[in-house]
Length: 252
Image (cartoon, rainbow, N blue to C red):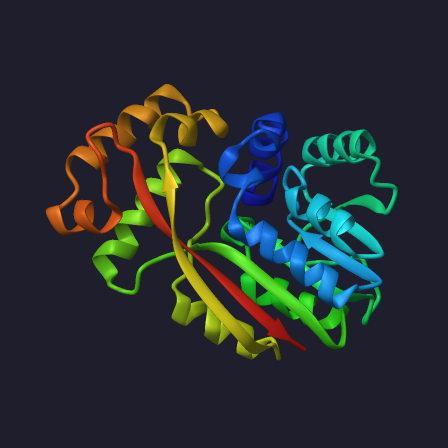
């Protein structure tokens, strides 16, 4: 099974968990996206790696004309389609596929958004090049994702925890890496914001159905983290912690 197949299986099996996940269903970034959609009024918007569809619902209800929820996991898309129908969002459609190969013509969208998805992509540079291609001239691309700290010790520790929790994890990129990749894709940064994202250990592992052996390994890694790593991520006695999230607002 390759990485794409693993991601599809992992998230297809856990789709319903992500619809109700507080981490994914709430946040000031979603309110900010709603405000942006109302300001830009894009005729066509793409939610890339849509997961359970929280960005899609926000854009469709917030001012976008037609929203495409795009994801490699058919199970996720089934959840999105059912929820869109429940909410009466007739301007939301689903499409299945990988971020690195978008089945859309060049200049198809005025707005592309990806939220908490890119750390699963096989090739972020290739996916960003595709984002740039399918955007209209002057179109906006919003990237929201977990980001790794710049120091190597903190970066490596985060990747180890992420991979043990979810075998489909590829990488939480550093802000410096994101900026380099966005620039290489021809996307110009307009605004940037970062914040701490609280993660409760119990729901963090339950959401993706982490197997017991991996949960035990996670607990062992948490117990052995150096003091400076525990301090940075604010690890609690129950292994709740805080990670960094970032918002990149870019234009083609």
